[in-house]
Length: 477
Image 1 (cartoon, rainbow, N blue to C red):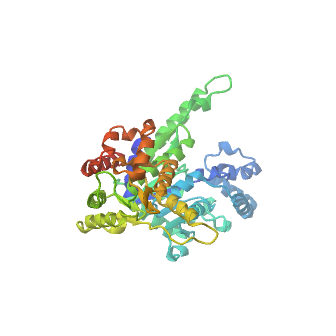
Image 2 (cartoon, helix red, strand yellow):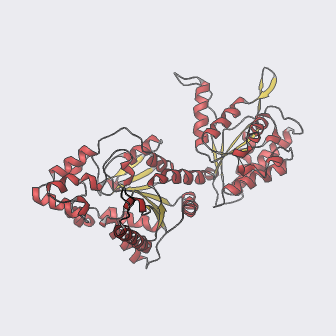
């Protein structure tokens, strides 16, 4: 078992190391209105005159139904009709699709996972059969392994005991691929009950082959709650409560054999918040530098500006963080040069890992103004960062030096997206305006409580040290 905070820290490290994976179960589809496994096959239990709540093995139940009918036509129709496209968005899957995950696994028949990836501008390669494993689509940036089939081909869905017994022959390459991922990736299981015999078999094989030295994985369980066992008169069904509590404790201990650490929740409604915090923690490694300068203000001159931007960029990359830059006027080239210097000094670093440039478009597309295009562009860049640094911020207009309003817009976008904002007020321009606004609402920015004074100075070295300290504190995981 593991606490939420510790899970976020550990899984963030796996995300940053690019060795994390996701496994989704039926619980992730319920939010969108689809039936879970139990409710999906309840009509078949009713037809067999069995109480679904008293049946411990639902796979056997579906087999009994097929045996009775002589074929699986009704099962196929149920899958086909239940998992139609609802058009609803799934918040949990949307967050999971934004994470830097390459391999996604699921036992769900629906298309919610691959749709969530596409809605987040990703191109999933969906694997349903053994044959599909050997065929790759062009420009894929995620793989979705659908272990139990797809709604479009319900006749091939894994649902009966026959299907499960034959799985390791009919889907042998799937089990081999999953074993490989369980050895090399850190999994997060979401909406999964661990009642699936195929997954249990694969987990057992990995544990045996590694002599118990398994990798750490994580999952979410809802804590057994007394209220669920208390009737309207306040009387507790103590026997049922104690029985289910013991069962949960034993199941948690058993999952630890496979390296699976359980995060206990009071409600599954906590999952979106946990995933959002996980995403936020991961994004703290990516830093957007917003800035432009036409004419230095105060004690600043061109030489000091260049040196400040160069050294700041260099130190950020040396700490293995990533810079996102819109190639702002007067600072873009020095930020690039600082990042290049840091990567050149370390043969294990590549510029693509530590610098992402987003020069603004200069020609408006059809049916849209250039300003609208810039707003959309800013939103896209800032969404990819966890921390936003604002430096300098002026531009030329009609021969005069004025505030760079584009930076103010970026500040407002960063606030709306709940980014960690560092206003370097001592550099003047829009940054000073942003600093003043944040300082007037300082209670909303507790992470800056020790830095307000230094952030308004015009001493380059002190400002760099303060910025790096704030970033470091955010990235302590």
